[in-house]
Image (tube, rainbow, N blue to C red; front, top):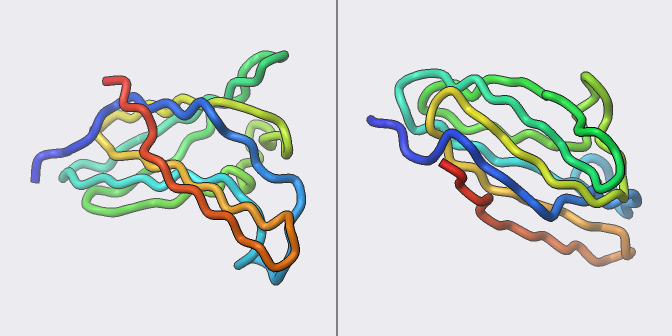
Length: 125
């Protein structure tokens, strides 16, 4: 199958909730990128994170295998540096092959309440 999606994606409204309630890892608050590579070639992806008052962080790199999905919790990114919890950020993902990117947030700050947000990222090209 020919690849669908785009090679550049942006998310403007990231903010990993700093507090969680409930069992881990199921109820850990997170921001996550969900990636789909429907093409026949592995996609090499890079993520750069932007803040309002400092230089960008990254790039964070990984592979999305051909005809596969990959979920990347931004909380888990540590190299070259962890993404700062509770701080607003934006991010740009570039890929060697067309992919589809969805942004997901799970917010469990309030006991007994889970807020889950799913949005398609902005396809730049």
